Amino acid sequence: MKAFWTVIVILILVGSASALLSWRSPETPVESATTVESPTTVMPESSKPPANSLVKSDNTVKQEVAPSSTATAPTGTAGTLTIGLDQKINGATVRPGRLVEKDGAILADGKYLIRGAGTAESPYEVSWELLMSASDTFIPRLGEREIPQRIALLNNAHVRVSGYIAFPLIVTEATECLVMLNQWDGCCLGVPPSPYDAIEVKLSAAEDNSKRHVVRVGTLEGVLRIDPYVVEKWLVGLYTMDNGVLSTEL
Image (cartoon, rainbow, N blue to C red; front, side, top):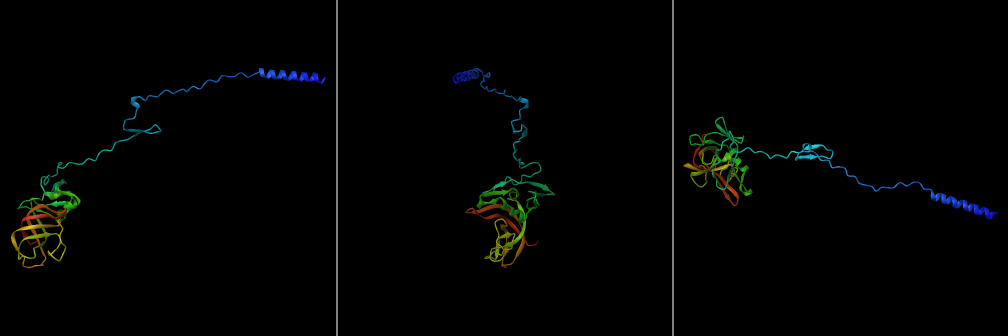
């Protein structure tokens, strides 16, 4: 009897297994993935940003303007004077400036007022501040060799300048002298001059030099020369004057 039921159980199990094997859920075939490319958007010419613009990531357009070069006004524009630009100065070139007429005088570079016409009858009246301004652009030891136009116009012109006078110490009658910004006795007292604040003068007539170490102040008129004297790149002298006439009546 046990063998019978054993056979029945085995048959039931075999039938169940066959049923399970024969039943399957329908399988859905899996298609291979296909990459779909989105069409390329062509921007119309009218909506394209200009060539000199910068497109940012948020699709905004930022105009980018190329920097413009700084414009420099040419020398000799309306209202300016070209006097002095044609001067030939040994070892130097003339640097153009801005010279305009103002109240019958010349206003140079908005700072220096030069009165007179540069003639024997009406010499230019020059200040030491003007003469010393040559040091702005003329320093041979540094390779700077430009004479400002405001200085160049004085070359070969009649000028009048006042200052301290120094004669050579070893003569009783002097035909030469220095006119300077600062007091100096030619030896020991005072401040020795620089090439920018002194003029070497050849006098038209000899002057009495019997009283030495006397402080002299005067005015000199004559023809100014801008004649750089350079030794081993060091500037020794800059201004000379011919036919100087000394007046001690200030």
